[in-house]
Image 1 (cartoon, rainbow, N blue to C red):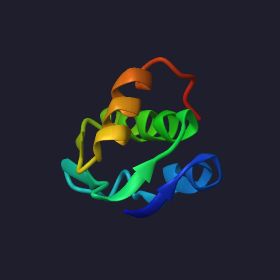
Image 2: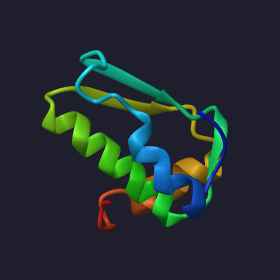
Image 3: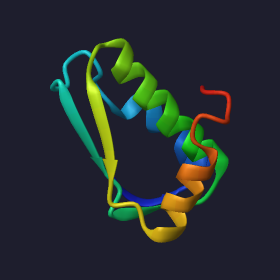
Length: 81
């Protein structure tokens, strides 16, 4: 994924994955992205939950310092989509 991730872009984030067809181990690389707000964290949580429902593992990598701090602080604390 690339670009700025905030409320407007995170609304469609969940639909960008092929959960049933994706491999057992999924890596979401956010090296070229920035997580700006809680709605993006909630979307990432929803994505992770959907993969877990399908008995698949997901790893989010490449978060810059600010994004990683925001994700760690808010993940699991917000209602998912």
